[in-house]
Amino acid sequence: MRARVATSTSTRDPSKPPMRLAYLSHYFPPESNAPAARVHELSRALVRLGHEVHVVTGQPNHPRGVVHPGYRAAEYRREHVDGITVHRVPTFPAANRGVLLRGLGYAAMPTAQLALGLAKLPPVDLVLATSPQIFTGLAGLALARLRRVPFVLEVRDLWPESIVSVGALAATHPLIRVLGRLEHTLYRSAAAIVSVTDSFVAHFVGHGVPAANIAVIKNGADLDLFDPHTPPAPLRQQLGIPEHALLALFCGTIGMAHDVGLLARAAAIAPPELELHVVVVGDGAGRAALAAEIAALGVGDRVHLLPAVPRREVPGLLAAADLSAVVLRDSPTFAGVLPSKIFEAMAMQRPVLLGVRGEAQALVEAAGAGLAFTPGDPAALVATLRTFAMLGAPGRRTMGQQARRYALVHHDRTAQARQLAAFLEPLATRR
Figure 1 (cartoon, rainbow, N blue to C red):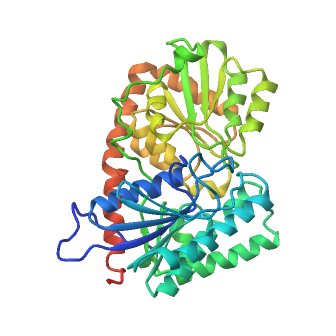
Figure 2: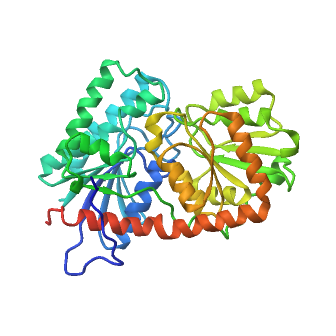
Figure 3: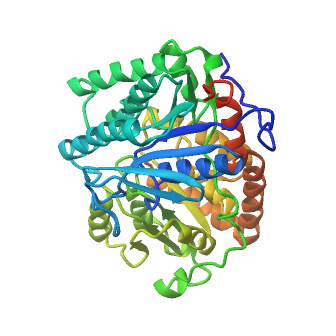
């Protein structure tokens, strides 16, 4: 059972007309989470290859459910970002917490994506929808059917499995059964599926999708933005962290799937001679609980919780750290994911402190890009931190250099866009 291999070419084939794609996504910059970055960076690279990309998304409001300044929740808005035409549809903003309000937000946007997609998009050759959330896939399928063009589903996380894994709903909940049927329908109705991991392929095949209709295009990084020569942010000076202390950074969404509190629990039991400092930069559904845990453990002097920053500031934060922490809850579902934080750290030549099993662990170890520990185990985390400390700055530097070399070969967003284009072009209905 092998997924179809998407070939990579340096440029678009000039004998073929460019594609015009509709790309439906729940997230897009200025939202700074991983899904927004993937859609933006792949779309930008596709445009540079000569294709025309129309992203249909909502008004930016992640993660707090507050519409960003300069946008209005109830409006339709067209803008141009790096050559991409972005269609922003009316949005019901909802913070990433609470089943009812979040569910309303998830259901409202796809309805608007379908209606405005039909009304505002020019003729397109193909509809690509990225999931989660899964209702965006449903909007993509409906739009493709009504426009009579192929539908391709990109799957970044498995729904509804991920909802159960984070404890949002029980596996026996009626909504989970409904989502399961919707998931099966989307897989079987798609002309092709783009997976971000090898691990998902068996899941799709189990739903009756031919392996030849599946392409694996993993997460990656913008290797120009994540440049290891980026000057480090002044974290140590601002927070009073000694130059010789071991600084572990977690930067990104503090979500229901992320076990960021584990870093605080590890700091509470770490021996003084380790001189560990943890910096957490981000926002999300788990931020308040994390702040409470830091206070309860009395580790606020060495676990520093900072607000989220724009994506352009992330490289400087990574440059200031010794390690980049990637931690998820210990769930079989998450053994099949590849968090994008891994590739951003690799691009910045920073070793990965990994608390994720499965495919992520295998990749990091194969690349020599970091060290893994048992998810959810603070003692195992501290033991791994000791190993990093014993490597010293020269050993960590060598590990980081290996990581960057691996990212250059395997996880360059521009090369991945070429692979995506090569996979989609035979499917596209030319105008």
